Length: 239
Length: 242
Image 1 (tube, each protein chain N blue to C red):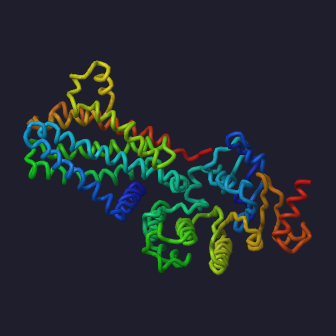
Image 2 (cartoon, rainbow over the protein chains, first blue to last red):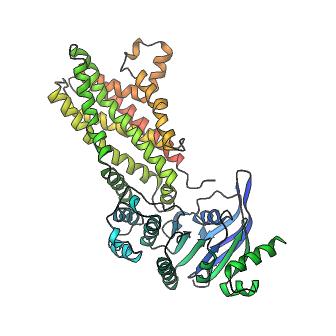
Image 3 (cartoon, chains in turn cyan, blue):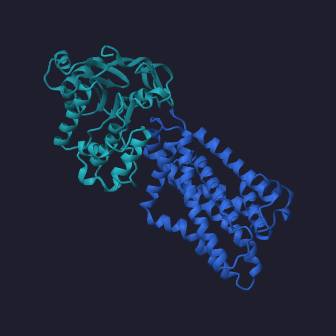
């Protein structure tokens, strides 16, 4: 199982309206790792994640997730998708939101309090989700995914707007999940978060411009700064 | 089944955080009914005819509005997209909505019927049938709301569907004038609109001695319309979107 890839994308093409958003993409993500999906906004990160979640209509190619086609019924309790907008109910309390998503995943209510603690929301457990800050809402959304205990996490920009301490804690949690054999695909447009991943996929205009470890990226671009590495690689690609 | 119940509970919890909506759903129909009664104080026959029909109309209107707005919110906030990536089936989602608003309609109908019968002296021989038809009307409103929400991009648009989908049915359902007295074209049109059968049933209720064949026919047609609307609504819940 360890050597098997959790995600296999082959010749993926996505067309939206008249725009080709992803023009033929190949990639694979191995099981039990944290893979960063980095790139500027508009580079196709969310579209790619939606393809893997099985909710994006694709023009051609194939997306295989945990051995089945993306979006197949068997994958629905094995894949946890946290969208960029915190997709939880603003007019429910934190606890009520989590109780609902836990019930959908067929899990009991036992883990709810612990999970609320893990994302640092114990004082807000009975607050209305709509009254929380943006960063807190994202954590409610993340907690809803954690409760389902999926094998694959698709996290679309989960650390936007979080303070550095919380960001560090969340990345620690991601590492812990990967150590337990879970696979995480985490998108971000903040390049310094790339350094926290086992592997980095750099996207630009729907294509991959790099697929390497953070150290590999630095070596390839000949700089220690990941932000600069992105610039170097993007310019090399354009040339 | 447990996911249907979890969804119904979630919808009712959302409602419980919104006391104004609860008041609108539970009390407003009764208040309007009382108002109507005293407007026609001098003509008790009018209230005896139209009063029960209004008891059937309110749950339909209210649940149509509440459902279509709630569902548009689900679609635009990303929660629907998320739900469709979980093991929740589309039928379970729709069933959960139907169940939650069905329960709300039950409370509304019981209070409305109690007010009408004990306070406003409405004469009905089968009061439980009022509640039954009111709940079926509410589920019909919910089903049509679910369906129409697919065509609205914003909550504002969803509210605009009220004059489009609901008002013509109110005009043609026999509330204002008996359907048989309408020009042929309008009569035919009223024949294919579900609210006509709800109004027929409530008209029948006012002078029937018991649950009769006409009411059974109306009930069958209404349940059939619910099933068709729900089936169409489930088709609009696409897992994959462009």
